[in-house]
Image (cartoon, rainbow, N blue to C red):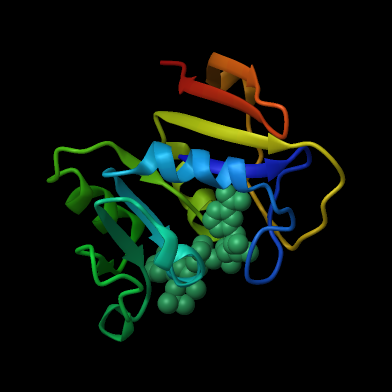
Length: 157
Ligand SMILES: NC(=O)c1ccc[n+]([C@@H]2O[C@H](COP(=O)([O-])OP(=O)(O)OC[C@H]3O[C@@H](n4cnc5c(N)ncnc54)[C@H](OP(=O)(O)O)[C@@H]3O)[C@@H](O)[C@H]2O)c1
């Protein structure tokens, strides 16, 4: 999973994120370039036009209604997280679950790793990343990048 959040796990406010930290969003675009993304329909509508991934699997209860946000990529509507994971595995690329709140909640128990950016400051919003159980995760990297703190986690087995 890949996400940016406040220290108290706010990830979204309305049609976007409450902060404007372009270098963090660039980190997201660089990391997910040519990868496979799994996204909820709302997040795909918000971020779709800017994405650099090779392919998105977009989770929606109305797969036949999805309008692709990009003409340059082969984005696909799917009916569940399970279907997204199964179909994404058929492509030989790194798979990232990239939000939003509904999808992170459903995916966190199946995730092998997390790459999380924490944006310092007080931010308000209505969408949250799910609670993180610290003992489930090993920290592989923890780096102060000035405007955000980047931490990479691997699931403890
Ligand atoms: N900070 C970050 O890293 C980050 C990343 C991504 C998003 N965000 C923020 O998160 C917010 C959006 O998150 P969200 O929770 O509102 O929406 P979301 O998770 O992006 O998408 C929700 C949609 O996914 C579909 N869905 C969810 N569960 C499903 C299931 N079990 N089966 C089939 N379809 C399912 C539904 O689509 P249909 O309605 O089409 O059926 C639902 O409306 C925005 O504020 C965005 O800016 C932040």
